Length: 317
Ligand SMILES: Nc1ncnc2c1ncn2[C@@H]1O[C@H](COP(=O)(O)OP(=O)(O)OP(=O)(O)O)[C@@H](O)[C@H]1O
Ligand SMILES: [Mg+2]
Image (cartoon, rainbow, N blue to C red):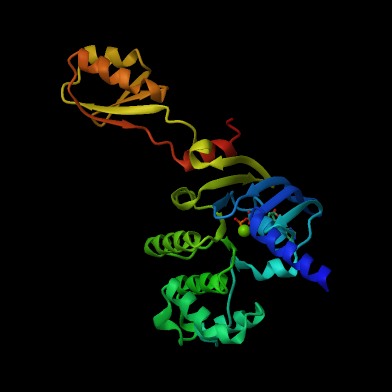
């Protein structure tokens, strides 16, 4: 008995202290198809982690492995400090599957009640949990309407509400914004930030790069089952390598000054200087001013995650 209590305590402290997710060489093959190959990574608590990749890259497979819905061909994974599939851990996880469909004839509230039951939440907490989840996703006013009358975007919000029930420590969202308009996407980003602010870790599958760029702390880029990049967005996108300037008095003398700092192009009234080290920008500005240039604007070029993503998929190191 004492031992059982001690073990239970050990399990609980493991679940609160360990990283949200750890994987080692996690691999899944379906016959000849390598859906995921040798995934090794760690997601710390409280992070919004993006898992990015083109269609068929292995994103959903990774989530299913981490949820214990499918078994790995090789490798290991731990979620909240316990091996995947652990029953206690499953209670602490929320999941928004891709392409889910709830029962058309149930109301939003009934769908959520069903999931409270499936998650084993104590019945006296259902009403509060459901109200909170509905309010968070902005569906409180539609709580008693049938799912069959919901738009795609509303169904996706309901899916998000299901994932939030019971205030999980870790939430997997598989393409949570695929059906949403720009306002809906903005709302979901806000919800994700709000949920993270209360300490929840979020694992977000997506191919919407601009979305991910806006909300994720770190991302992994997967392609054909392999992780080809992992890190913060600035780490993946790389340093700014260009700067653009607008001058009141552009002329060839100043252009020659700019050329000392990098490859120069002119576009829509701007000078673009490429292949410049960011630390060299103050010298560039000083040189232009010394040469009599009157500077109206200086802007570092912003490489986007999408640019880098396309390069990575083409094999550019
Ligand atoms: N149950 C299955 N049986 C056979 N092959 C599968 C199965 N599930 C996934 N695959 C294959 O594994 C690969 C990865 O699929 P997965 O669904 O993980 O991709 P994804 O990155 O989630 O793509 P999407 O962006 O289209 O959702 C694909 O080649 C897919 O055909
Ligand atoms: Mg998928």
